[in-house]
Length: 575
Image (cartoon, rainbow, N blue to C red; front, side, top):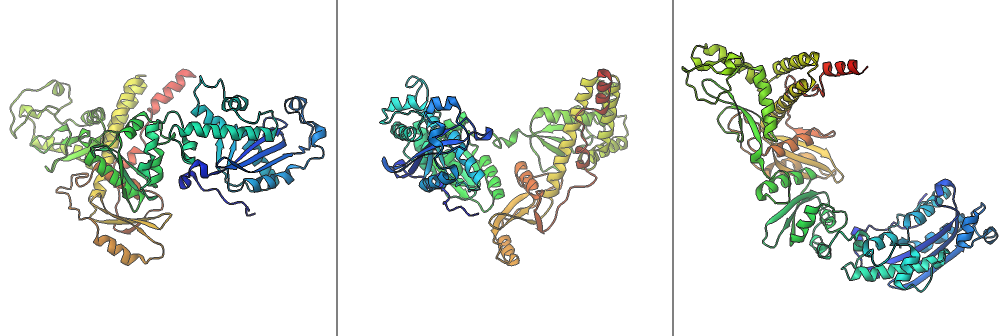
């Protein structure tokens, strides 16, 4: 069934002055507190107003087709005898909807009144129009101070604003009183700079008048996906964000929906908002990352300090060793990472040192070292090349196994540390077993991350597409960096369009060394592209990429939350 009532436009699209908006103020009397428990409507009162002028009224008793409880009669004065000849809700509701069509519904404690009306419509099979609703009780809580009114009951507010009608639990009288309260609240809000319908709906005391007045900063932005940049009076970038609807997202910073303290502080400093329209949401995400890296906005918490990431490096020297570093160099060394913090890199380093007997000292060694053994060598945890007695071939073989664990299959690390966890679990040393588990987890996730980054970085060119609301979202990726993005209309032949996109794509140079996991883009950018490529529905248009089957990924899926032995022993002890 098609509704005869037009859909109300959203507040974002209206943006109208309160004096230009038509409101339908409604009040109900009922037999109880909820339609879900069988309560029925006994009276409807409604007043249609615009700009302070009454355009129409509706008042009628309603036969609830059940007896009215005595306490309701005492409260409202409505008796069974008064409603026995009254029309039923099936006759009344269409008249109310006709009066309210095209209006914004207003009620005091709106969920109660609107809830009864929607329930009645559902029972009668009448589609409920998509009314926008304004609640005077909620608005009063936000606009009035506690020392002004003791509560926000309709009778209290009517007295406070000097309403011409005294509410008395009769529908039309209460609706008329609510009209006066509504106008009184609008006058109060006007002194706070709230003059539009959207401002009234989103008004809260947490949003300062100064912050609210800056809503105009969003007015020039398009309803398109892209990136937005808040700038201060000196043109410095304060914050960078991304959205599928730039205007709507930026406008939300000046309303009650923005509750973050730091963002409120940022908005107070903002004097301008710039935007970059993007063809796709993925392009917007990538541009956001690049802009944050370029400007380092003080109110962005992530992506500002890529130099704080750490890597584990297998050095290129006569007697290689593992080292935690902050930069990936063009030195043909092997790198694993990045790690978000140094603790994770140290956990992974410990897992590798527990498995492989490479040296842990930082001393530079020539091919023929002459020195004394250290404590690790005495404990059998190092092959001790420092003494000069070790056959280089033995050390090279150990390094080769380590390199395989970093760049290929880390099975040896998995087996060694799982065995250790089992041993500790058998000894009921559960905390120690958990520590080994954490080392294994950090190591495997780092190797897996590196292998995924490297696989995409090694691809010269990849073209992929995914269906979107407005067409096919097409992206060109070169060496792990987004080189181009576009929106292919479904009515356009793809071949020529894709060729044109490739012709305008950014030229991206290949990495100097294959060992680099992501040298031509930030790690976050490449991982953002990887997540999108793995999204269901994405299709390869040109090129391909893959993660090694015999790599770390197959072990990551089996990472233990706690050791099997730990769980089994704990179950036995608590049985």
